[in-house]
Image (cartoon, rainbow, N blue to C red):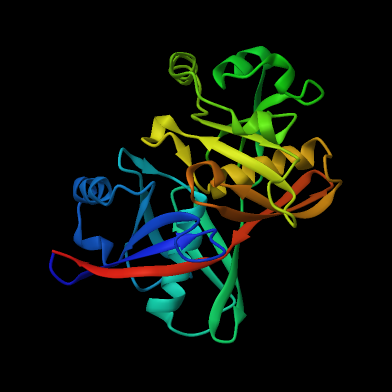
Amino acid sequence: MSGTTFYIVDVFAERKYAGNQLAVVLDGQRFTTEEMQRIAKEMNYSETTFVMSEEPADGAFPVRIFTPEEELPFAGHPTLGTAYIIQKEILRQRVSTVTLQLGVGPITVSFTYNGDEPDKLSMRQNEPSFGPVYDHRLFAEMLSLEIDDVDQLLPVETVSTGVPAVVIPINSLPALKTCKVNAELYWKFTENSMAKMLLAFCREPQEEGNDLHMRVFVDYFGIPEDPATGSAAGDLTGYLLKHGLYGDAFRLRAEQGYSIGRPSILELGGTKEVNRFRIDVGGRCFLVAKGELL
């Protein structure tokens, strides 16, 4: 494997050593699926991506995404972080967009710049689909909350823009901070549900200048809580549009990862048109390290 370069990137980070970490491996065609899975497990980040070719096919770079446990068709922060590395280390020039060919299809990432350096990246996500609506009490118990901590005026609902999440509206920031997953109830629920992520949010930010606070629990994928989740943020954006919480068009700053010491900022853009939702999720990336697989 000598000569195979990898990068460590902080995604949805306002500064280095915040946000969600990602390992990006170039020259992915050198590896079998089994080898890629083993490398992802060794990296032990929430996801590791493999750029399968440094030459795009039909305008898109083929990319595969792995958690330490399995391959995913789509995930948000790996999409942004991989596009960032493609721009900086493969293309090495200012471009307005980079398109990745993922398991769910092509996803285009847009760039803005501060001088020659990428400033913010944003991805257009797929149209949201909406699934089952659940009893509030079940998820209050699953998150070790009182029933009154869950907003009874809004549904607990499954939403997906590629990876489904159960969206749970919480009444206050103090309640959201106390959430703790009841493992027995969680695993019983995920046995029969396509949604493995629990996204709890409230419209009370911790820091001035932000709009809402979110926590995403993902025990199924090998980590208890995710510091920044682009796919879940897309799900939340679809939920906010459907239920009109911020009108038919908005741009919001969502906090995530504060409870685990990896403060992250995700920018949610939503527009509701006739029979169509437009969803964009973005943020900043920072290159932290570069290495070589031995």
